[in-house]
Image 1 (tube, rainbow, N blue to C red):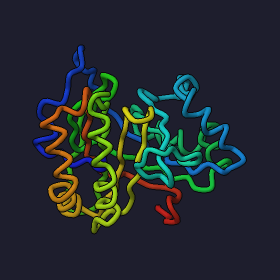
Image 2: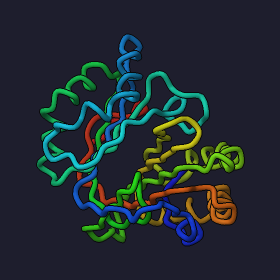
Image 3: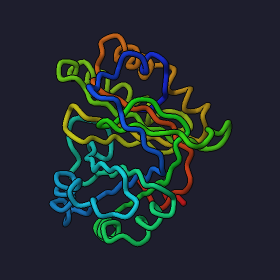
Image 4: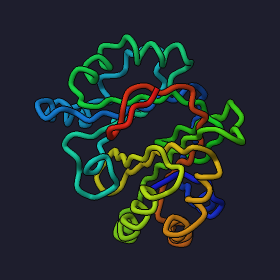
Length: 250
């Protein structure tokens, strides 16, 4: 579901994991890549087998390699080129070393037409991702940029209802004033979805999240219990690098 405002209706009654979440703290690194056509097979293998190839990265506590919809969007048709990786590192030095010096990032850089990385600190977080919860360790700013992540495991019985609302929320997100970047990501087709977005400030994010199609989707998710597990996070950006969808970040 596009976007990550932690509205109260979305928080209540959504978690049903059998075991309590393990809480971790650290620095989040998001990598987005648009793979060149010659390397699409390599990119698909990263999505399929990436979790087995990052175990020896220094300081890495948690990672997910995800695909995306067409052009990095939120649709049901998978993109052959766009993908992302969500990582939690124990500190900024480890995250920065991964971006600058790791062989994996070097491969992404060589094989991608566009590559974007964002280093982020957690300002607030609710829920969990595969039993892992994030601990907030910085204060959210009243002014200045803010990033958000929404991810959810969708109940199979609710998939049709969830995706029926996706086009309207996607359209409103791309048109939202103050939205600097938005990408749809997923660990698995249909049922394990995530959205990352970057906003010029908290006011712009709230104006989107609390109105229109997005608020309607939040209410429906709460009322009909769309999710078996979900996570909603607000981040304070530390640094960006690279480009995404024709825009340079630095």
